[in-house]
Image 1: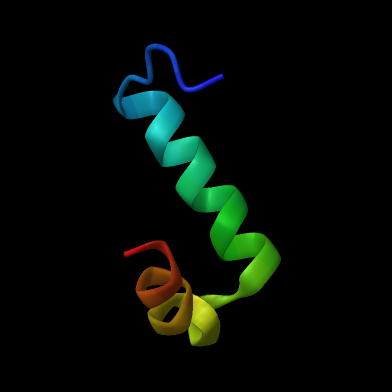
Image 2 (image 1 turned 30 degrees about the vertical axis):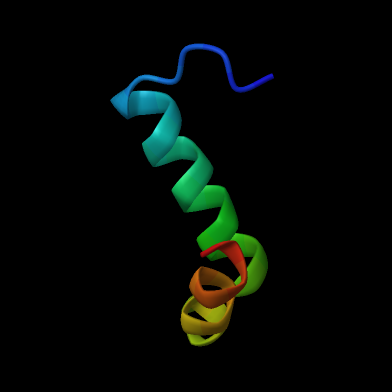
Length: 34
């Protein structure tokens, strides 16, 4: 699934994550990821 991700794909994924979780949950999400 995570084969070749370009800058555009990364930006789209980041935008979707922001829409789903909201900015307030990003610090906790970042800690969970690493």
